[in-house]
Image 1 (cartoon, rainbow, N blue to C red):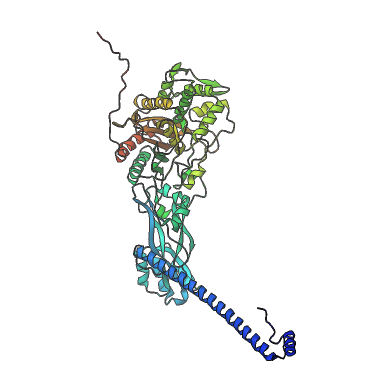
Image 2 (tube, rainbow, N blue to C red; image 1 turned 90 degrees about the horizontal axis):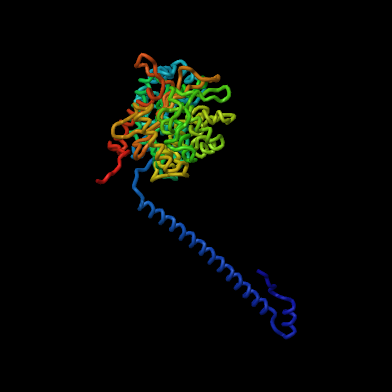
Length: 593
């Protein structure tokens, strides 16, 4: 604001020249200045009142919105939070496809001591040693009589242990409430659950974090409050998983195997309804990882995805299917099986002498290495490699557990023609049983690639085409004949028309070469073969059937009976009713008289 002089000299001189009173000019300027000051003060007051009014409107709006939100929300009991407990410990549940609980949180307590508040350290140390056998009274007493003001004793204790510590009655022994991860089914689906542990810890709270399996893979989702604690829904079926584990455990013992794994997959959605790896563990008391020796000896080792093996003759159906897709053969094409097949200094032989020629269908039925290798020669290295890559056999699977990323297939350093021939019947390329399940699912569903998943799906999840429908139809008939007339005769289950392929591969030595008396036995099956719904893979590590006088290690004697028993148990649980397999009428002609 520009201040005008009260007695401007020019006007004063002019007024005196006219004979007017100069004081009138001063009084007039004082009046004008006061009016300006009054107008400015009024404008400032009006602005302040407007701002204050807006503040009250916004404040009452927020209060009203909060009251409306509380009025429409579900009522709940108030929970008092411990001062300073800023560690977020909430974690969503994990359930199976039917909503049955697989993992949840359990409220427990931690135990700690404050030595300055203790009355009788000796009695407290002796009492704790009786309650917790893994603690030493001497070590506790040394800590209690030191200058330390805080001592962790147990990160989590049971209600019974808490009551026993209460009974000691020492005020220096204190408790802090916290959550722990609980797996109510114990060992069931342990390798899928993986397990959880504590991250950041405080006296009254602890950060629960996943350490393996789906717990670690979906750790961000399970810990995110924005999900509203919505449970993570898996594709597993708890009853099917329990039956599969029981059968596989019994089969592993009966066949004297070192380890075993099985995978049951829906061929259209890729959902894994059951996956078992033995030996197993209890995720409630997860053992420490092995620091030496063979990793596969540890119960933490997940054979379904981490175990990469030469899966033997189960690969033959892929070779035959590719040859038929390329127009190089059909089920009735005769192939030279006279042996041995020579390639340089190497010899490829069959388990038995099957004659000089076999049809392609008989090559699968009899499991001829020579016949499969000759088809692979016609296919060629480049086409074989491109086909296996398209099928997903050359990269780790995207199965949603952290261990799956470590199961990368072992490829030959030099993919020569010899490698092409041996890979055609499952040697020279090591993959996981999960890879094999995905490959057989493509054959069973009509030729479309399927991605294995542990998450519940709303419907089919089919990928690109890898086989023609005509090829897969012919391949399924061959797999069925393997069971009815071939190497998997023990795999037939009345009412479920099982089709499949056996595979027996010599187990490699760590230092190179192969064991003469140790094998990996696998049976890859589909059922029902005339209207496929599921793929089942059963793999046994170092099995040997000692029931007869001569030990038997081949898959037909070891893995196949176990798979058949598993199908017999789980098929009714899957809602499959036994049915009569349709019979094709052949060599019948209609004549009219």
